[in-house]
Image (cartoon, rainbow, N blue to C red; front, side, top):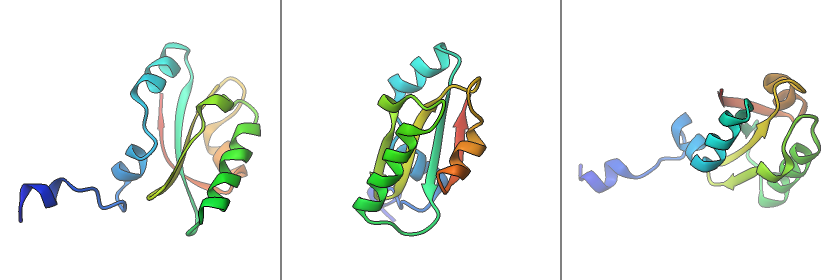
Length: 105
């Protein structure tokens, strides 16, 4: 197998889903502010309209910094910065009807 094929993202593994909305500068700012970065995915296949609805709901969720909400259609994923003093990452993701992928603290 060529190195190019090995380097291509499959979109199925956890790392690909996190990488789809990962922003290094945003993560560094969040950590400096003692906040967490949450990565999640829809529980089922979604189209662009449904993904936008997840993002809109995340922007309104308590503790979420609305300006940090990011989405990816392929692979479908959502990320945002959360103030852990105001809300719990697991509970926020569950309320949004998403599955938690990873939390960076």
